[in-house]
Image (cartoon, rainbow, N blue to C red; front, top):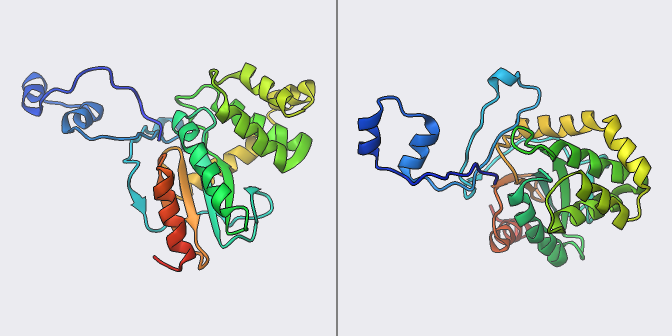
Length: 249
């Protein structure tokens, strides 16, 4: 999950307390030696004065979550009726989402071909720290507008697979590589037509307890929802999927 860089070396709690009686939360986190994969919550719909930057251990797993039902309105890769659905809340500028993307591609290679697992992508742009996150989400929707769901996933794959910095140039180049009309693509982004859709995904994420990206909710055959926080390795995600397919808890 996305984290803020910490350049200074950690100091002991005793030393820091001698220097100041009022420790800030970030300093306290460093002093305590908490290792985080990081997460910054961008809560759209929450007054800006009340928005907070939060961090959460990427290794923690919430047993239950609540989110809107998967439907034909979603961007789904694989069988929409799969026994297990993985709903990922992602930020196209998030380096931890980029790291997690190959894990999900591998999961789909193993479980998607025979229809056991479907991958659902929902937007959760962390706009407070990623200046191109919203534009990237709009760009993916504009790819979908031109050539449908396949183009949506092709665009996301192109961006996460690129070596260059995230930005408008990369989005435009990705659009050309997947055969989109460049002018229509850029006009669509500028129009902000899909802002409401992105906002709906963000609100759904907030309701479901998303505190950073990537955040995935794995829905089992019985409807049980298990949340996976952060860019967990393939083996971990596979263990969750296998457990659900086997009827485990």
